[in-house]
Length: 473
Image 1 (cartoon, helix red, strand yellow):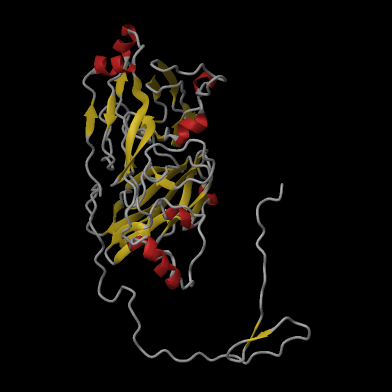
Image 2: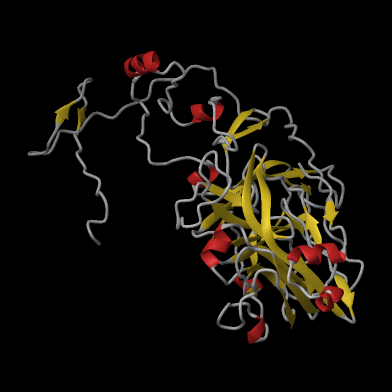
């Protein structure tokens, strides 16, 4: 699933800036080269060739933004603009993002770096950039109307500050925030330590991705920007499974996962087969005495978490959000439960009117993963993805951690599906199933509402009315 980065550079400094419109020639001469990305594949780490050295991260289905050194200052050029993001093969979304993609590129700097960010606005409305979690001068915090005027369409603003502390941070607009974030405007910022840090270990693999969500109707391209919570596409870096790349590591590598949440709800991120510790938050590295083993970590809205573990168990391990509807993908949830309902007679009558009618959900929802129903153009099927043993019945916030003993160091290529050693895969039991030993039914208490079971065992009729609505509360 992983491929090498493929930058599509602009035709030149002047061409890119002219497209921005409204930027005068004096400013053009000072702008760093505009670099955009068109591929949705995971790019290889961007190894620094100028400035302070560091071990770069790998952005899942993303990339890191190149920079230039200018008199000791590390300069980047972000361009806020409409973009087209392939969310998975078969579906593209019309979003807003930075430098050709949503999320925007990862920004990587080193503790103590002086950073100058040129931000050009190609959106149809004003914007700003908030550097989420950074210690910086108040006027660089990027809150429109509070700490700066908004960046008008066609204009370029400059942010400049020192990256004061190492850690994992985010960036996003603080102007018309609900609309612009619903359209996909966000990105990750990594500040690497400038020297060995007592609370930050060296790792072999360092992955980062953002949790984000969209509400895009089947057959549509543009998110519904007024949705508060009921999103239908739960994504990592604006990708949904099976469009999310796997995380490929060598057995016994020390692995770091950096995960930020810019959705409107929390996400319990669960790693199979390994225990991890939380080594960092937006507030910095966690004290060693405060770390404990986990297999899931709940990441609240606006939070970042760093998790670390040794990948010592070979295999293909699921990595996902533990909210089950976040791994189903696009679906309307306001449908009745049909499990156990024999609707053959109804289906027969409907088929007379609608020949292509298909019964769904009689045995559960798994049937739907393998149905090949016609869908509107630009719509992803739900619960899709195929593994070595059949349908994965997953979509949305799901990927695979692939641990291989023969994966070369620093090689992030997909090694394919795991080949299980003989006798290590769950198998069908074909022996005799003994009858269970049942306890005798106790005598019913006096006055209880009891009905007799078919086999003589007593059962109790339960009638419960589920509360409906909020009744004005």
